Image 1 (cartoon, rainbow, N blue to C red):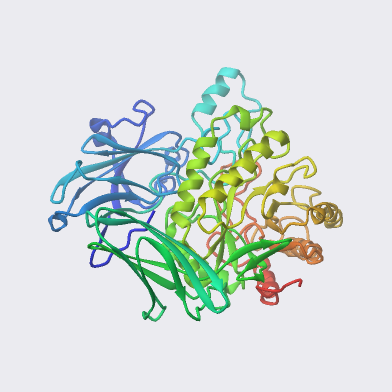
Image 2 (cartoon, rainbow, N blue to C red):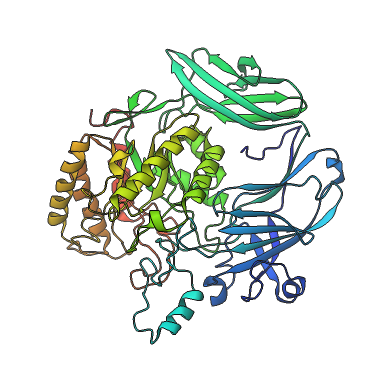
Length: 600
């Protein structure tokens, strides 16, 4: 799916701004009731989560449907053009109505979907756009909700006086099986864009390297009649290569490579022309490969320095905020980091563009977080999740396939891969093959393993890269770093025998900013630094450990519960991006670790 870009052939009109909005009272269940909306509607900002825009518990704690609407007039100068309504993300289930007519339903809260308007409205028309949004999570959604009545890292229903009372309690609350707040609504931009009737539908670019030359195998998908041509432009705007036809191979002599920061992330532009349409797609010449226990970018062993992140900020919630994204990219470079994981869902497309420009490597993750965690039944045999999971992976790769910053696909975060090991192995290895089959660049594929009995886990070891979340010294062996380091080495001995690249995709300690102690103990800034110093000393001794991603980049919001005080406090930065002592520690550490050749 191509990102909406404006040029002399295409237009893009933003529908962001103030919309009318109301929460369902539990009686309409996603159906539009004009009188109900008219009587209850307030104003709301789009894009943004709705939860924190009003200072009322019913917004913050809402579980169920909500309704957005606004009127819009399509400019008459677009007569004769193809018109498309695009939603970048609506969380988690959306029903789109135009003048009361249902025109689209979409499941999944973190990837774009479109409505072709031909036959629905035309240029010059004024219409009422309404969107019904359902934020409920369950065993059939991604991310997963817990239907048994216990929220992940929250409070269970101990002390509820009766089974009937417990049922009422569950129906009024989302119980996420994940440790971040279930922000919902129209979280990303809404746009109307136009193309010629005969248009470019998609572009696939597959780079490789042959000596000093760059190779680009390409495929252009079109609708209608016309000829395809493609020019490759340098960063300076010069044409450096040309080809004709819908598919082919282009050679870029003496190509400049896309390399991670602080090296030069050089970008070319593929300018594709078809009939009356044109589209510019930026890309980089770079290769990605796993070789033994090394992760290679452009044929050189790469070391991941970075973190898990979240799209999370005050007031906006999970809503798109370009200023925060620009600031975060600046802080990533300040920290001397070179990578992050889109934990635990695909991010807004704009941050991938920023990462392409600034040389930040991305592990691109689906929203499949929490599958089977804490359940006594086999989730892979019990719940209907596979089809939706495949849809999400397909749409993720279709969206992000041309980004040079994306070097690996993560199919999920912390599923149960231990208690039903054979079922888990069958599910994840088959999905692994499916993911590989979809990616034109055939990047490495993984999923991220939770803290478990790694000897029983048969699935994690089958991935291209072993990605593990481990909290020795925090959730396990809490505060005892001598015992934690001993446990780390026992597990690392096991993974050394597997002989695959390993990235520690989460490790960390909750830390209250400004809480200082002379003797490092849990929740102090001194303990957080000591925790990382001790853990990293063990990781540094293992040449198969090819990356360290402390959890988390910044503090973030979570469901309320006895394990969280004002959210998750494991950030190297506060939620408003002020550095803790650990941020300065990693800035010094990563400043001394090169991107390539570390541990060689």
